[in-house]
Image (tube, rainbow, N blue to C red; front, side):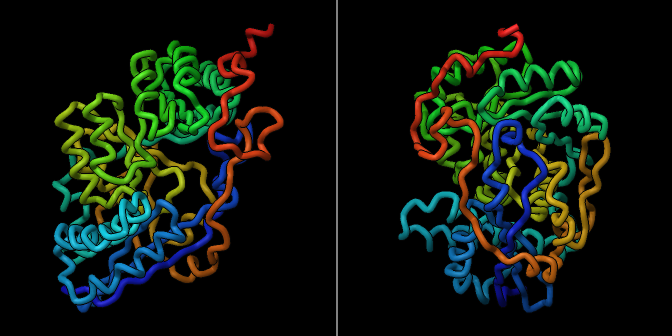
Length: 400
């Protein structure tokens, strides 16, 4: 079975009703969320489907540039073809999440093709099930949303953003009790100093978080070390990283307890399997990132987690933009805070191209609002010290 064509399908996706930013501002997803799907066609008539992220509009150009290198190649040679694409990208320097997002989409589609051809699900190809259902968490901005999620059966929640995050996290914990896992995402902006992150982390310690996510920026290795030494909480991160080498420095320095590769921008299922092995050797777990991704990458994450022992929990936008289910021919079965693993051959999902084409890409860059120093949001400064600093950890009860 040989590859005959590779096609990109880029669309403008609507924003989810709320994210971690909702309590204090507007997420960048509100205006700039794009989904990039890829279909790989073969001379056997089978079509594999994948999804790539990491700046979808730019990733589309990367895939279109790489596609001629794969025409006529055997679709089963997933590892070799991935190596070939990395060699082809090498001359452009370290292409980061753009290059690995392109590889992720193609790799995902090739696994889908192989599963269809062999009559097996991708989870079976990856080694078979170690679990039949995948636990997930969703985002909440306040106590009311948390209670609504728990009423739906969700057993893990994440609070995010920057302004008032300590107070909101305590409010959510009070609303749902100790039997629900709680996470806090500080989003790792460059204006979050290590000292600030340590102060917030220490304030959150009484909540017994499942993890504290991205307390500082991923390029601030010294800052991560200071947070590790100063906060008694499990640390999570990695959604903005692209390669095994990027993750390796965090693993070897013991800076992360939970690694969060993005299913659409971390080089595909092939590289995520390698990361899982590296993590297993170091006693670490994986919780795939999925905040801005569409439904195809979520299917891929579920198959990966079904076949991988050292995974923790799946990130899931619930509720999401209503059009999410319309762009694919099947949906994941969700019940009591878990997702069932599809048993159909391949990924078990295909595109409704008419629905995708009905939402052409319009914009793929935006800036989140909220969380800046008062009166400075219009400046959009990349590195901004936090002022007034005392507000970072202050709770309402402190003023009562």
